[in-house]
Image 1 (cartoon, one colour):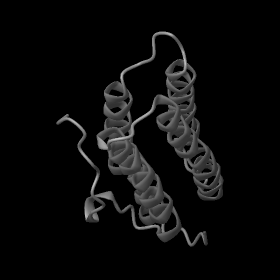
Image 2: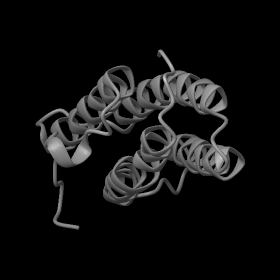
Image 3: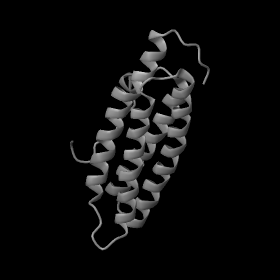
Image 4: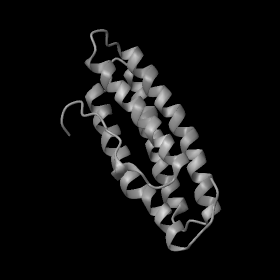
Length: 142
C-alpha cells in the first residue's frame, strides 16, 4: 500500500444496499480522519487511539446491523462472515490497547491493516450476501 493512502468511495465499494453502504461510507470517513490526523502538525498517539476507538465503536454497531440483515436473509455463510467481524474487532482492539503501551505499533501498520481489511471486506465479502439476496430473489427490507 502507498503510504497514507485514503479510501475514496466509488461504485466499486457499493454493495447495493443503501443502509450498509452508508455505514461503509462513515467507516471510510473515519479511516480517512486517521490519515489526516497522522499527516497533521499536531499528531498524538492518544488522539490516534481516540479516533481508532470511534471507528471500532461504529464498526461494532455496523457489524450488528449487518449480521441481523444476514440472519434475515438466511445467508448460508453467516457464521464465516461473523468470524471475519470478530477477527477484525480483536485485531483492532489489540492495536488500540498497544497504542498506549511502551512499544506501540506504528500508526502506519494500523492504517495498512485497516486499508486492506475494509477494501477486501466490502468489495469481496459483503457483496457476497447481496449477491445471495439477488440470486434468490429475497425481498428483505433493511
